[in-house]
Length: 247
Image (cartoon, rainbow, N blue to C red; front, top):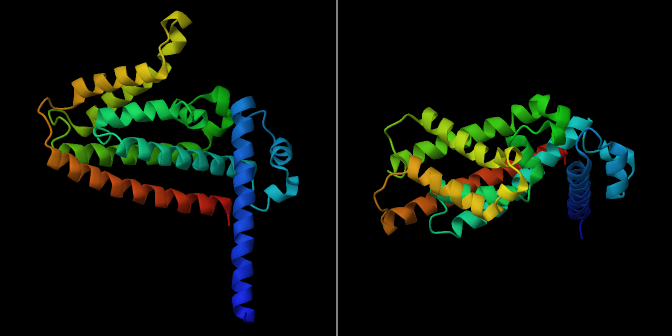
């Protein structure tokens, strides 16, 4: 093996080790944050959980906030991959009511991302006040929904008797309401996540989608388009995470 090829191989192996180590650190950070919350989770705790020296963490992230932002990006990417499979595996998954039904169920397995959506300061504390979270994840979400609603309207899969901003407002009020409602009722009123997702899905369908049946040909076109958009979105997120990890 030439010296050049050996150096290239060594660089790839070292990068892989750094990626694996970074992933282990981020997994530890997510586990501890879910358990104790952002305010109480320290770099020392994360290093101990991940089995690395405290200084090793700073080889990847310059500040504590950078580490936790990378953690949230990693969680968002993981959730997006799971959600993609759920959506594309359901004949109605690419429609507004179908997408949110799956999103609401999957979100239960990602409490940190749910906390971002609901601005849950009990779990994320001061992290919510930094532009890392509010200017990044929240902005991504808004851009995604604006493009998604516009596409559905163009394909005749969303009503057009109201403007997009009004529809996104209605959608947000309904979806956030379903995610928050349990705190206002005793446990006897709480419903399983799957049942809540179905109720929210039907509410969105009746309020925002047209009554006319959708042709199989149109559904196939939309599924293909949505698959391509999700692939683009996931690729962009991977690049964001790699940059945040500083590999």
